[in-house]
Length: 140
Length: 164
Image 1: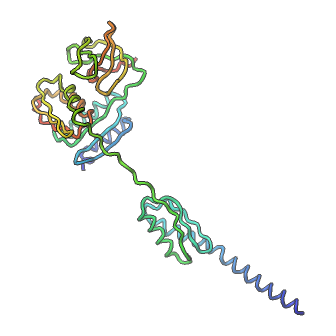
Image 2 (image 1 turned 60 degrees about the vertical axis):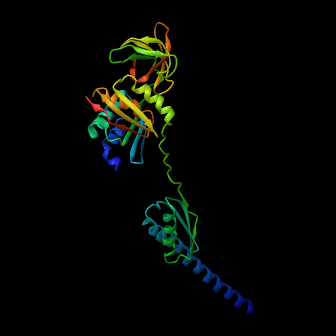
Image 3 (image 1 turned 135 degrees about the horizontal axis):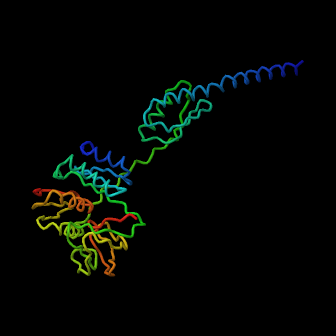
C-alpha cells in the first residue's frame, strides 16, 4: 500500500493547509495532487518525500503540489542560481529569446499563462515568457 | 322492542370496533420501533427511515449500496407483526474517483525538454507517459528538477540519475 508508505506526506499536506488535495493510486503509482498555500509548504512536502524515498528513486509517487500564487501578486524575483533569466517570445525553450532579467532582479508578473511559463515584463519594457521555476512571488 | 335489539346490537359492534382500533394503534408504533432496532444493526443503512401503518412497513432513505437496502428489507420482514414491506429505499451513487490524467507524449516531450534544459548532465527520455532520467545531477538540484517534472502530469518518473 503506497498510501501507507507515503502517509507522512499526505498527513503533512493535510495539516499544512494544502487545498484540493487528491490522493489516488493507479498501476502501482501513487498520485498526490494539491495546491500549497506557500512555497515553504511545498518544500516541506518534498523534504518528507526525500526522507521516505531518498533521491526519489522508487518511481512510485508523482507529487504534484503547486503553489497558490495570489491574484494580487504583481512582482516576482528572479531566483536563478547565478545567471540571467531568459525571457522568450513564447512559452517554450524552442522560442527565441527576446530579453533577459538579472539574477535577483524584481520584475513584473503580467500573467501566469501556464504552470510552467509565466508572462513577465522588465523595467526596461522587455516582455515575454520565463520559466516559472526561476520566479518567486514577491509579497508586498 | 325490535328497535331496542337493533340498537343494542349496533352498540356491541361499535364497542368491538373501538376495542379493535385501540388495540391496533400502539401496535404499529411498537412494530416501527422493532423494525428500526433491527435495521440499526445493519451497517451502511444509517439513512433509513421507517413508517408502519396497519402492519405494513415502508422503508425510505438512502443506503450506501444495494446489499444494505435488501438487508434492511429482510430485517423488516422478520419483525413480528409486519405483514408486508414496501421498500422505497434508494442506493447512493458510488463515489467516482476520476482517473489520473497523464499527459500525451508529444506535449510531455517538449515540456520535459524545457524542464531539463538547465541541467546539462541530465538526459530525459519520454515513452508512454514515463519519464526516464539518466546521467548525473547535483543533490541540491535534484528536488528542483523533480518538482518541475512531477508537475507535468507524467505517468511516473523513473529516476536513474547518479546523484553527486
